[in-house]
Amino acid sequence: MAATYYFTRWIFVRLLGVVYLIALLSLAVQIDGLIGSNGLQPVSAFLERVDQQLGAQAYWRVPTLCWISSGDAFLHGLLGVGIVLSLLVIVNIATRAALAGLWTIYLSLVVAGQAFLSFQWDGLLLETGLLALLVAPHGWRPRMPWGESPPPRVGMILIWCLLFKLMFLSGVVKLLCMDETWWNLTALDFHYFTQPLPTWTSWYAHQWPSWFRKLSVLVVLIIEIPLPFLIFAGVRGRRIAAIPLILLQLLIAATGNYGFFNLLTLVLCAAIIDDAWWLRLLPARFAERHSGRIARAPVDLPRFAMAGLVVALIGVASGLTTLHEMVRTVPQGAVRGPLIQALNWGDRALLSWGEPWILDWIDPFRSINGYGLFRQMTTARPEIVIETSDDGRNWREIDFRFKPGEVSRAPRFVAPHMPRLDWQMWFAALEPGRAAPWLEMLATRLLADTPQIWRLLDDNPTDRPARQFLRFVGYRYEFTTAAERRSTGDWWKRHRVGELTGPLSRAATERGE
Image 1 (tube, rainbow, N blue to C red):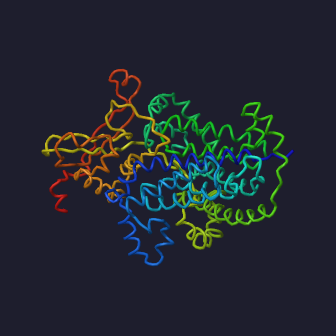
Image 2 (image 1 turned 180 degrees about the vertical axis):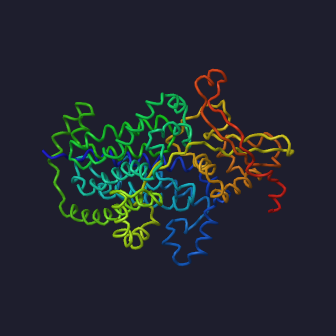
Image 3 (image 1 turned 135 degrees about the horizontal axis):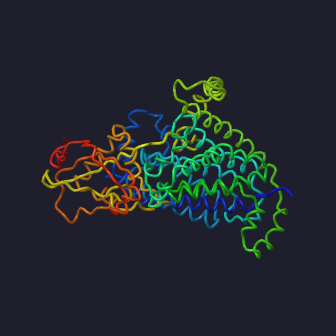
């Protein structure tokens, strides 16, 4: 009997609802400080600039419900409605309509979120949510898992293609970018301490012997590049691929904080597991009661055909994003070989028309994307430390909740919560000039003791006089060795690079200087 995916859909849709719920709850406790009226990148000012620059095209190029209102109450309203819709998906009420609403709301928030909602897993959640509409059951109270017609196979295939695209691109771009740490298998010599938000387990992983870290890099490349092709090798191939793909995500989550990314990838992995395997994992009584019902549900051929047309259109766009991601990764002057020549041909023959006519058209909706995590490994860890003073002579460091600060403080687990300011501080340390606009706003808001900003930090301004001065200071961080930690108890060692800014004055800020 051919493999079926009734229960697979039942699991996939509910878990996607859980991911939406986590993403929205995580954002709800930060949104005022990030894009609210007193935030770092107020959405009202952003939309005003967009309107001035784009005019009538603004609504298409920047699709967000925040055009209706950009006030704090409206932002919280969007989050509240999204949380309710995610609960409806979880409990199987109006599932397809709720998923459509969730995609619309999350797109609105991602667009309005600017730099703080620009992470690859935000795009991955939008793409997964869009594809879920192709397989979600219809009706107000779908009878799941067996009472509905089977999920359209073409829809399931497109979800499998997304998992393939995510994993394959994450691996192949590591080699295409010609980063020597991936080619010589030394990437994990740096990864554990240079990743954005390490955990305490990252410190222990960093102590592994060099040969084991090199072997780990090789295993990662095998899992990410050749293994995903098994997704298209029938039921047996998908079963073989599922286990290492799942284990990789669990290992990444065990040694780093990546918000809801690992959980969302596990949801995609769940979509390649067929009903027979799911029933083996469930209690025997449940399996016996439901296994005989799988084959009796009718196939909805018209729905299958309609979904096939949609899949073809999305598939073409998704293929172009895959090609585009690979082409843009290859550095200028790369040694020409068969793969590079094939990419150059694809650039000339496909992207030359596909990018302006398809990719540029779909880009504002952020729902068919290319991916490429850690294509270039950072080999050092710069950090921006913020110091404040009441007199300009005695300085005190501001503590963030999750990013490295005090060297004796153990790195924390925070995922699946996504502390977006802490994450952006990592990017800002790598490219301070690019982050300058919101870093300047961060300094202004901190000097003004704006409560929405202080709530993003692990610091309380109410128990001391108002700060009069602030400055950004550059440091280099690295994990201690085992011997150093036994001696000092510290998890980190750091050295001061220098001041990134001079003292910024509260008085000058209030005067608008």
